[in-house]
Image (tube, rainbow, N blue to C red; front, top):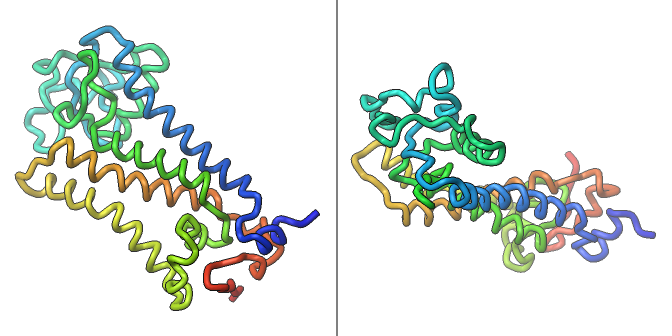
Length: 256
């Protein structure tokens, strides 16, 4: 029975068990949360989630008052975050919700600013994250599903990352040893549009639209899912040696 390295050297794709598992698991985790983002406000009582506006990377709506309740105060004086919660539907605390809803809104509270005018509403209830984050999650899940079919462990992060592209389309980058440059360019294509749209909002009077937030969020999530899938799939120990890795243009890895 051939070893893992021998199998990959022979057909260039191997059995792909780990790569498929990585793509499937990442898609399942992000996809489950994406589905719950829509199901939770739909199944909750109508108008039970007020308009929210907090800060990213912090808990602002964990409690009505106290340490984790910044969002429930009058934050009208803040330029880029917060509002007068009392004038926008009254106080809200996700710790008062059922366990599933509390988890959905807690994750949103920690990771997203939750500005209501940049978020969708279902059944009179604001979703737990903004529209751009919806796009990011959708792109992430889509890429992980594609990775499940096309991704391949090729020892290094950069070569594993590039394995999702047809070998013949990237041979010239292997001839010129420009694999890292290609990986960075791909990441930039996915992230730069979102960065431009977001920072322009932050630094000027420009206000994006939800359509633009979706359009820029999806490619950012796609390359994010691509990078995470490659990171979890690149495993040198699955090969007998670096010479067993089959690369485009018959390139070989050299241990320095």
